[in-house]
Image (cartoon, rainbow, N blue to C red; front, side):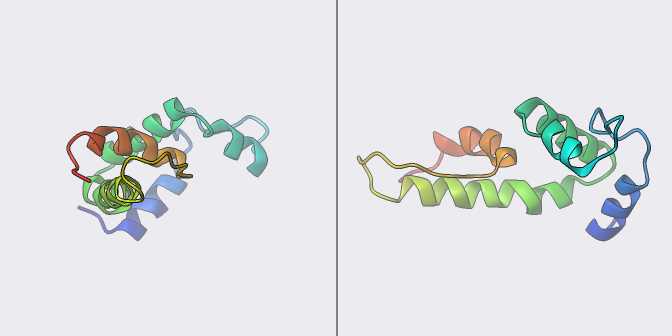
Length: 101
């Protein structure tokens, strides 16, 4: 398993980063390109294929569990609004039913 910094450096040098590269190459276009769950899922799968499973566990899975627990423990029975990063939505949904309040 490469260390996270090596993994990010390797990814940043690729010309074929999955469907995130924009023809104009502007930062704004790149940001807009990943503002949907499909693109986030593609990015996560790409990082996994690059050997970054442990990196993703630390970056997403552990945080998803923490966020899910925090949201469920806010005010049981009350309605709440949680603002979370798009990359965490799948994980929160995954852990929601298995984590007790």
